[in-house]
Image (cartoon, rainbow, N blue to C red; front, side, top):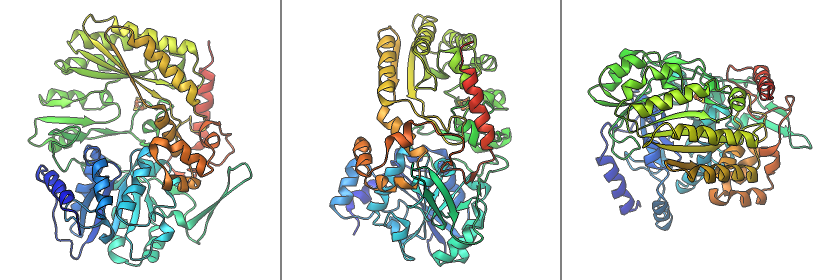
Length: 542
Ligand code: SF4
């Protein structure tokens, strides 16, 4: 029996939606697309929305949705023994053929476990039977390193869904037996079956060998990409219950031309693809307000034309460059824009390959204030490799200089600790120690918050460390994930015997196999290493 209060709550959400898809589940592949965070967060994700629309455009598929319930609802689910159910037909998740998780953030991994527990689906793939749904992992986290989730999911899709998920869906329609299906799926591009491989470790805990257990299983799995942005992934459901409310989100570009050395987006989404203007306009439809989505929108090939169309376009983040200066006029009337110099230190900007000068940062900030933009959000980082006290001082000076450009404007500084990510030149680097990160954040906060018109926000260090642990982790984190309480994860880490030192703080040598080495993302490991070495060279004081 499903709990009435929970059902009513879902009905209220559905009433506010426009674009929800309802079908007869009979005779179709029934997929429950899950987002491991709340409805509000999941429905604000264009990737999630796009996938829902894309899957439902197939006549042989009915795709529904499920989210992590709010805190108080989790208690209600548990108290009333209600199994987690889908939104559209309100069916318990274990009645679906396929459960697909779209995962964009490492810190959502524990929520996957929670949702499976609420759904009464055994979280480990080896404990599930042919009667349980098949569990598929997708999204950016699946693409750069699915290994911490390898024992939970039956299958992983590496890459961009519109580039190659169709053959898998067709296979699901033809083959019902789980084992047969997995065997056949492993021959498809982008499909990875973790249980078909075993991994051994040496005495130091480093990966010794990764072995394919069955003949014909691919050693390396290629990341699948869409050739063009043709609008297959597009905003599907409008609801006021999202971050962007009634705004239609349109992905303008994928990938970024700048390749900052710390940035995953700048590496894994290559090549850069620009959506043709006519498709942007088509997706806009009759809506007056659109939110353009893309990593560096001032570099979008048709940005000028898009802004000239006279529609209200939400672009919040711009690159502090000469090109942006010529676009700022279109943003007149906005309350706020963001720039991301990452650091005030020229030396560190050179090291991370953030190719913007202080002069460009100041020019863009000055022009923004002149246009009446009241608030400038500035993204900064701490804990970058080779960071020194002088670099923090340079950041303080830069922020004060920006603040000094306007008498009334506000500078909102948003600081995040650097997290080394797979498939970037810093994938080998040890993360900065917790005490140092906290100390540096305290220093920035104390020095800058004392100034009028400057506000400082920063991420919580323990969550950045958790992100660092999970993004470069391996299969040995499974027990930790199963029992983990995010608020107190260090205690759980100790209890499961996982070494924080091993995963977080040490710098790996080039020869050490990395958990994600089997993924062919089109980026040579040697090239990344050369870039890392170049960064270390450029970090030296001239
Ligand atoms: S940090 Fe920004 S500009 Fe640099 S590569 Fe990433 S998305 Fe591009």
